[in-house]
Image (cartoon, rainbow, N blue to C red; front, side):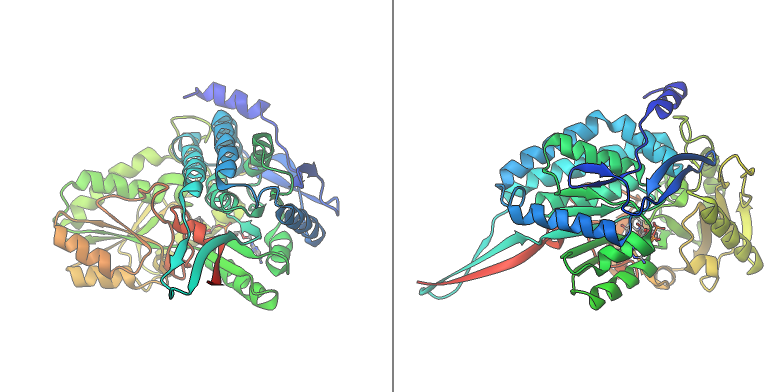
Length: 495
Ligand code: NAD
């Protein structure tokens, strides 16, 4: 791991490119418009980013369609696509520190998290998915003897991926790895708050040998570039990760245009349940702190609702407050830093507003609660734990997307399940118990796409990632992710 001074030096020498990447070339937006990308830890401008809109979307979709129809990628044997994607993964690994610095500068994430989570996970997703693509077989249907029924998967065509700012490189990788492996052409629209790393990714894709037009990156705002992509009649699949509100809009846009397939991976308000038979209270408490304070709480699966069985609440809360102490917000480029800056001023104000609403509704701040932001010095918030949380309170029901933990309590298993499910979201959940039967019972009853027993956040490329209810229905990672980007074709041959 580099030292703080070495990361700083890299951050000063790294190229910050803000142009769109279409048909294998960097170019300005057709309008010539740009917007600034801001370093949230210093409140300084990093680069001017191309503000793409409908005209750029038309260019990118035309380039993607042309590449798809030419067969230059879509007709390659899966094993050939695999080789190129593995080269791509190697280049991401080679330039991992550079990509880490770009995301850390752009959205305030600690460099230690980039190096331990985002970069290795992105590489693994690219490699694992590339490796899988020449091992998937079609089917022969059990029809009568006078026919042959073939069932196969075909690439869907032009895929638009719209991604959020909280894991810029990783969320992009979870979409582009299966979409490209399956043979599609891809247009990635990153969040306007963090486009730098994926623009560099586009260059690496070209260097790896991905043909021009097959992978395009269009930076821009949601209501311009994002909306134009979602309404475009020549986009076949729209893969989205972001808020539930925008997910709903994208479904409307698909209905207003060509009924493109829309995959929604949206917000969360994940519960953590700690039962009195939890074997290791200290471990559960430090995991609870990590589950809300890593990445400043800007994590879709953040366990922002903690329910502790009444008999151990006091002891657990003490351990939790102790565990939160390592998450003091500091310079993201210092490798010792465990919590960085919030992505922007709006997010800082949103988080501060939720803390105030919790106090107004009668909850009690146990630690933190004070924005430590000094104007001009970055958007930092203390790790905040709020006790006496009741499910009717706004800060317990709504996704805050910041380092704010609501702590409530339950008396028995039935109440724990009821409290956990009393929320519109259903992304993740964490359950702490030494009782195997209870672990299974509660996992079955919890309405969420993912449950971690005696842990949180674990997962690799072999396991699907996604939710239920207002958290959406799309799944990233695993072989299931390939289903999103392929069409099922049946061929009925009379013998
Ligand atoms: P967001 O919904 O505001 O934006 C996400 C993306 O959608 C951005 O690229 C944005 O430009 C674009 N967008 C916004 N309005 C649009 C419109 N009208 N048409 C088309 N595109 C539009 O979300 P965000 O603030 O970037 O990210 C935070 C959210 O993402 C949180 O709710 C978080 O839980 C969620 N998230 C979910 C997962 C998951 O896997 N389920 C993972 C990470 C983040």
